[in-house]
Amino acid sequence: MARQRHLPHAPITEALIDIHVEPRHDLTFPALQQTIATPEFGYYVKNPISQEMFAFKLTLDGEQPQTTAEASQIGLRLHSHDEKYVAQCRLSGFTLSRLRPYEEWSTLIREAKHVWAIYTERLAPVRVTRVATRFINNLQLPMRLGGSFQEYLHKLVDVPDEAPQAVASFLQRFQLVDVQSNALVNLTLALESTPTLGPAPVVIDVDAFIEKDLDPGGVELWVILEQLRALKNQCFFGSLTERAAELYE
Image 1 (cartoon, rainbow, N blue to C red):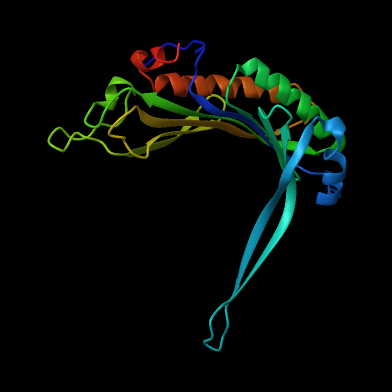
Image 2: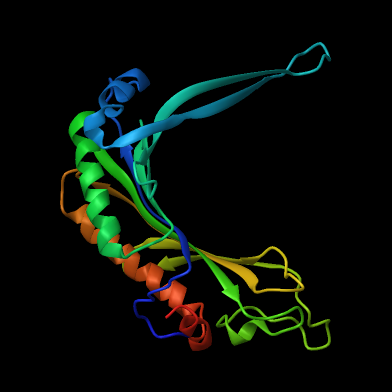
């Protein structure tokens, strides 16, 4: 596994903080839109977030089942004016994504606290029910079809010795439990296809989360996010070899 440290050229394509809430009982989409879609929020509205619901009705006379579909608006997708951040303000929660180029955790947390303070002040959620941080990394590994991914990926499940050794694609996914905190981590390593020329694009997706009853205005929320970030780092660097980490220094 690779040593944990700051990688100046980390292969992060998206880093996000996600918070689920129990909304106040009278909150509606028009009320959310009215309070969030304002210049004072600091982000501009890109588009609404919709949720589709499908229903099936069985008949007793042998006819085809009847289906209905209904879409409802549940939130807004907003972008910062420099296009570096995307905020999703929903009736049931809040997500802040940092796009490329990723800077550092302290910058993401500072912006998340700023936007979250506005969200909680204007929408007054009752409580927080789930907290998560997710990092999607796109590694570009300098190898060709037939090379060994174990040179760059630590403990990747290997193919049998007698099988063909050229790997065209793979998907490896674990759901891990931190027994001390009861936090969960979805760890996914994937390669859609190995190009004949150029680097191999391997995705390492680390989603660390916990379901917990928290005060929306309390400090424990941010303490837990720091703990989840530590779990994320353990999983990310634990998935790399030193040779892979050195590519991004």
